[in-house]
Length: 351
Ligand code: NAD
Ligand code: WQD
Image (tube, rainbow, N blue to C red):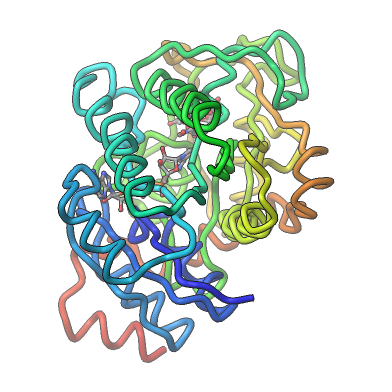
């Protein structure tokens, strides 16, 4: 069944890929994004891929009057809530920005939802809420902790949503804990476009491959992993996007509050990722080992059994596809979305 959805942060990396899946399934999509970490070009590309245009409202989720107006005007059946800040290092320097955007933003959204009589929410959480897990793979009932303001903001929201559900069982809330999203849309038109020097491994490697960065710094080769480098569960962004559509079905069936891991269920080391990228791109990625990055952990991967069972979802794309799609995006859009001139943009869309 198709419905109308509000997608906060829908112009961002995961949001834009989710908009594609939603539009392709015939849903009506309203995007609210303040473009603090994205470009409207992402939504033009979404339209180029799907031949359907999401309704775009530029604005902030912390603006209650705006959220109220959007809910009244479009009367969505569900909200998928991606909007927020996500850079761990920046969160240490600007903690109040993170609490304001991630915690207060979600608070405003939930208040306006309740006032409107809308109780169906999908929330973007993160594997970061598991801190440094005592064992692997990670199940949803593992203890939660956070080591930085970004992680704490996600944990605070999870707890706030739990309290909200306890207070009013009309809420249906799917907390989706993403592991490490990677890759891009297979068209090469939509992908990750970090505003600054990338923090995350795959966008960094991609920029080394195009020559924009000299070499990759591998943060530590003395971790207790098979090759000494950090191990993570990388999940293709299109698989992740599909997971949201599966979560919507759960909301419609009255799931109450539930948390699900979205990951592949296996880990790859930094060196394995480098090697997969080299194979997919035909490029050599120069790298050097440097000290561990503060706050990093040795290894992290999901047990996706609950999402497989409850959501009938599983990741279909492996590391090879993630790297091939990341490379297609990066090599055809070496400067991302923002620095394209109008004619260049159109030429790319025509291809
Ligand atoms: P992104 O930065 O590409 O997308 C977030 C979007 O939200 C951006 O378009 C930004 O402009 C918008 N935004 C930020 N604050 C806003 C506000 N106050 N009002 C309106 N719009 C606002 O990030 P992403 O990678 O697509 O992540 C989406 C969500 O998933 C975030 O909540 C993030 O914390 C979470 N998450 C991301 C990862 C990851 O590695 N990418 C992993 C786990 C969880
Ligand atoms: C992956 C591996 C690094 C960059 C972060 C957030 C997490 C979630 C996903 C939002 C690690 C190594 C990285 C580099 C490297 N985001 N690395 N050189 O740290 O697992 O997770 O993004 O919720 O909250 O913490 O992802 O891509 O930064 O790192 O060696 O230049 O690559 O040490 O082992 P991480 P990442």
